[in-house]
Image (cartoon, rainbow, N blue to C red; front, side):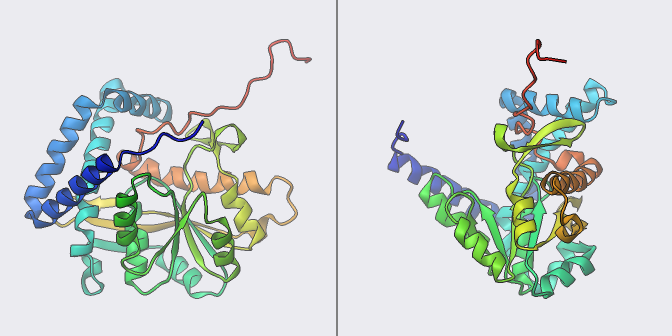
Length: 311
């Protein structure tokens, strides 16, 4: 079935609304902008019943020791985090500069990050929908490192151009996850540094690993690329460690995975995929309200054998 044609007028109106909102947020005093984020979070929590339910179910599975009241508080905090994140991303180009970056970010495990980025060997930076994942590429470009990020092209062409300019503003290049495979390969072959989100559901064809004590489908491509092109893997998270008008993030390297350690192992893809999910889980457990629990990360599950299968 052919894709339904997009409404050009609606696309433009949505783009205009987003641009207006960004301009408005950038013009607001910090306290007013954060107050707006608080109101937005409260409204979203009350109106968005479907995702609120998904978040509560996910958190209940992940933290079975927590009471319903504690789970509900985490769901509210999750909405608050992502509403605040929208504001912080909008003002990031206005605030974060080479001369003041230490006010807003700290490199944790920075020696591993810098060593990997300065080598000729290719690097895969693996992160999740956690903290402020947009900050890492923006900040690394600000420091003068040439990095690439794998992302899905947005359906709205105006928004796609707008967000692409934002992401490439400090020198980061964007690679389309669906159409730029050859460019991804060429970048790694040339020793490039590529960032990707590694916590997305991969459907029935993915490799199933354990994530928060539940089977989760993960894309095989991350581990396969690391193995095939000898790319060092940095598992990175960007949690907010201080809120308020002077927000602050840690750009934290949780693990360094060398695919050479798995040479000759038949299940290397699964082992590597499990390892970086273990590292992401450690980061998320420290700051659970900053993970995107609202999406159906555990949607795909392994097929159960038939009940009458031979024993």
